Amino acid sequence: MLDYYRFKEIHDLFMKGKTEEARHVLMEMQSRYVSLCDENTMLKMQVQEFEDILYLSRNLVFDGFCYWLITGNIKQGPFCQSCYNRDGVLVRLAAAHDGKWQCATCGATYEREPRYGVPAPGFGHAFGAALATAHGAGRAGMAGSAIGEGRAASLGAGEDMAAEAQALPGAQAVRTARTGKLLPFVK
Image (cartoon, rainbow, N blue to C red; front, side, top):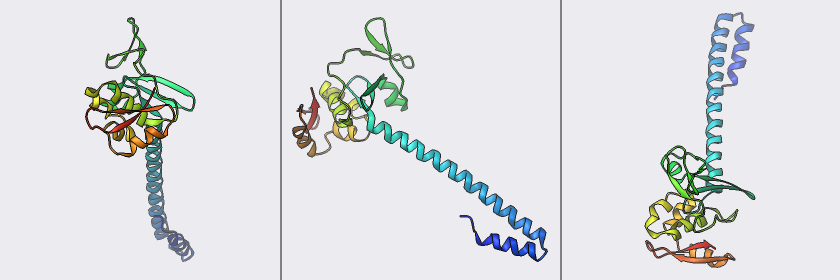
């Protein structure tokens, strides 16, 4: 923290004619100010990084094959599930010749029309993870790799999921083979 009382000390040293001591204290204050500015810049960058992570955790949905970024009524994607799970990087999939999507980074291919549609905006990760879980009980590890709530939902972490599934219109319950807990599922 910058010690503001030191400014009065510097002023008093100048008034007494001790300019060398005053300059020395002033240079100390300047050095501390620069280090505080650097720390402030670093903290601002960390806050921005956390805001970006929070944004992704709220808007990134896994449909059982790939990830979609849903903001408002806009659906962006698809993004490679392998690259995101391995490196945390969103890599947009490109159309392949055989009617599939292909990742230019890792070469993974995905069906263009997954068995289940993308969840509607606002339904969050619990539904995306439920779709992944519903797609195949053997893919529970992949479904569990979704972020935040999706991870907890896909692993069946809580009895409250059954109540949530019954409370939402258009939702039905899906029982996972791994845990036996109910997860919400959108048609």
